[in-house]
Image (cartoon, rainbow, N blue to C red; front, side, top):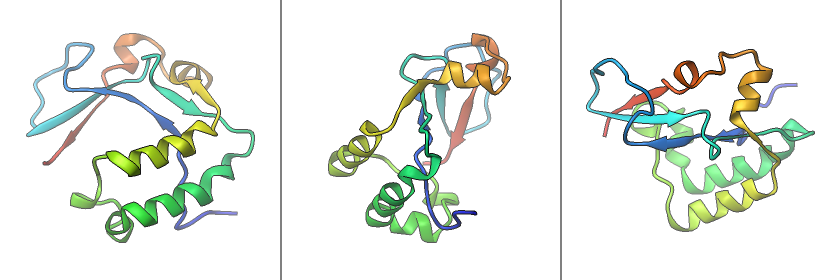
Length: 126
């Protein structure tokens, strides 16, 4: 059964302002770089994948209703997490089972070398 309209917290990637590997010149005003092999990058591997649907969906609806209405597109796509909203999300995540993202990459047969897995970046508009 699908879960249309519900959100799930699936992981956390270590982000920085600089890449961990050399990248070609990017044509973007701003870029978020992330290191999927960092020890701070985790995948939440719960026995019951839908276990966090209700708390995460409720949290998003409370803190970012315009993002949901805008289908996370354009200016509704990315939001800063600060203060009480971040504390609540951390509390939800604390109850989940973290697994190193590198192990998740290995299980999913994704290339697992620092060069292949860490060249990930996300251009965004401010």
